[in-house]
Length: 438
Image 1 (cartoon, rainbow, N blue to C red):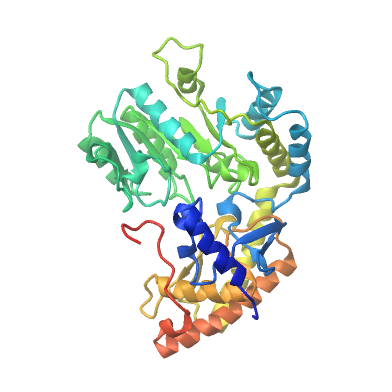
Image 2 (cartoon, rainbow, N blue to C red):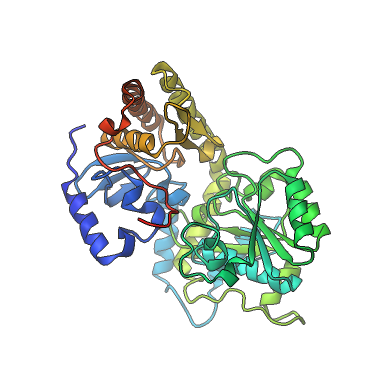
């Protein structure tokens, strides 16, 4: 518990002086962690990271779910180093682009073509643009119950941080609730002939209701729109082929990223040939400027993706992630019950993609109690905004995490009994990412 954060505090100040928000991803911001307990990372290995003060942590939610194999995975690094010695970018496609496409389409057999990029937002926005081109319709319908789809205007306009986006753009995005076919059909009726596509995560914190995805696909097609699955999180974490492979429902288009590169920058737009050819050179329709990125075909990132897909196939990584998550969730629930906070500290979601919820004395979600919980975890040597596991976690890592959670639950109980959580959080509470003002 005797940790110094002096160097991290200083580095955070310098980051804020030079980088808006102090981080290049809002979800990694200092405001997402307790005051003066936002470690700046120096390096990582497996499921562990070390900050600039030399503190060691067991890490969860690695790279916002991107590093599912753990840091410095040897097979991934070997593939990357091999390609770095061969050149990273050329004036024409590299042969690794063909190899990566073939490997991806073998892994995700529900897709017929694929195009690679560097980040998820480029892929999802390309999918939306393609759907509009195919249908000739202006509106995008996104699942309003899900957290994030893109940094681009069509999505951010529906968040509290919509400053800088004209109202005319906002009018082109509508929302639908997850799991409610009736409400979605009503949305189509209300905007008859104007919705180009529906985009959603097929399953993240909950599995779809029986028949929902099949019904949604049929409903979307009946109204002449396209169905897009955002598989940034579900791809490789739920199964190597994503939610579409696990649940047996094929979308028209889908987007992948995060775990695909195990931390290296690579994303993918995949789907049916008849649509993706609109962005190619063999189609008679008006051309679509689909994805054209200078660095989308960096050889080392594609080599990382191929290596990741090989490891997933050879070692059944989705099963490993599920088993690691099950062990952790079971342990956390046991120690929460022992401390009498089982109704306040909750583990939710699929074991391979679990989050924790922190509820106050009235059983409402609480940023103050989240701050308390995160604070005790960090001081105990565990860091992460969630309980999302990597395959690098050992039994010892999980057992140690459960010990730290037990201590956090004991403090949580004290705060509930005192009815004064402010006395236990050491400063301002953590804040939601999406908010209008600082």
